[in-house]
Length: 329
Image (tube, rainbow, N blue to C red):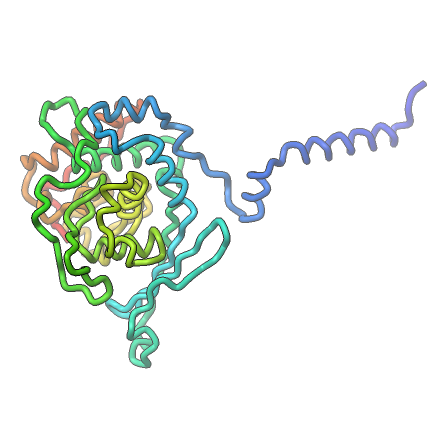
């Protein structure tokens, strides 16, 4: 006997409803609640075997597990940086796992009447966007650029095979203290702030700034800079911090590689244009940029970048890879 049409319609409606409910997982619900699309993870295009193959001579300190743990933990952090005038700052750090936001830095003059009259500018650094903010090819390009710079900074050898990255945990000369006057991030007596980690974090100002963003407490790395060479997760976190965080007039390397940064009038006059070359300018422009095309260190970074692009099965056909004609900041 045939069922009435309205009963069949009810069955179909119930089935469609159940199917819709089954298709929405926990992660999808969270993404919907946050009005954010689900992001791919770096692990979806970089596994442990690939990481090991990219850095075959790496020091055992640098592991894939440490890198991925650093990514996940930094992914739970965002920092809103507001600047009044030229150099008065407030940092609000949010733990995305709890939603708790804390003021981790507020400069002494922040609430002065004269300071309040200064124009504010602010931006948010979401460390969870590292190499996952755009499409797959752009994300791979960014990771290739990041790996190229950390490989060059930590290499030991010049065999032209680009297999010698992540070999140094700290710079070879540890006698230099790298101290600079800094009221916000003063050096701790007896501590040295020489280059450590994948991007060779150096100077007390950078250690304090990184510690604020990573831990919400400047004292952790100011008091114990050796953490960057004894804890591999912290080491990778400092590199991610540096890659993602704009510095005064400099954009972040992340914003450059995803096409978010566009040069202003001053940048154009200084030949600063989007591309891999700008990441070199950000990291070590004073030494390597605006000195022509025959600077070994600049070309070494470019060589690593092309090597990693090929390893990822992609290319950067319009790569502005050189900073040979770019003025440093």
